[in-house]
Length: 212
Image 1 (cartoon, rainbow, N blue to C red):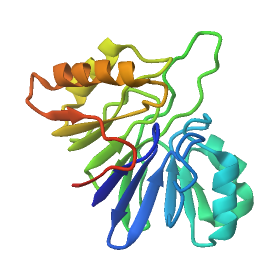
Image 2 (image 1 turned 135 degrees about the vertical axis):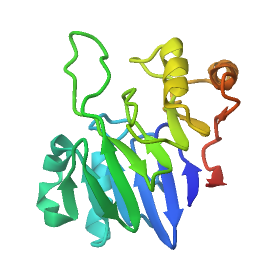
Image 3 (image 1 turned 45 degrees about the vertical axis):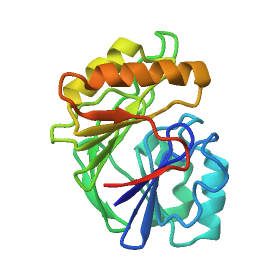
């Protein structure tokens, strides 16, 4: 399976000629959905879901499928059974990828901001994308897509979360708000987070691919 980091929280997974895209938001770039066979969306916030672009892609490609939580699925109900709502504990196969669903709620932003649904996805028992939450799957995670910077996240929480999940490797995502200075600081904290286990925690430049 090949993983490609796109802008912010979006990634592409490719296997056996099929492409799965997770969280194509407004900062993900115009080609994020190019050639996609299926899309997973963790939650409704604009940095994880560009609804207009996804709707256009689904209209252009009748084979494109969407799996997400019930709140987001309602926005695309007119696409019929190409869209399916999933929730914590579900397992399904989409475009040849085996997916296990974890988590229910977005992390707290502020007591005045309503908490929306958030759905984490474990792909092929290998790659876990938690969305905007610090969900720890019940199953082992080899590759964690680690939220690196967000209004809802402290550095100490990022470090502790990475250590609790204890993956073999982690790639930083949710980094679209960081400038060059912030990215340099992030690299140091990723190193600190990985120290206890000797795992590899790093950030991929957008457009970079790795084979898992």
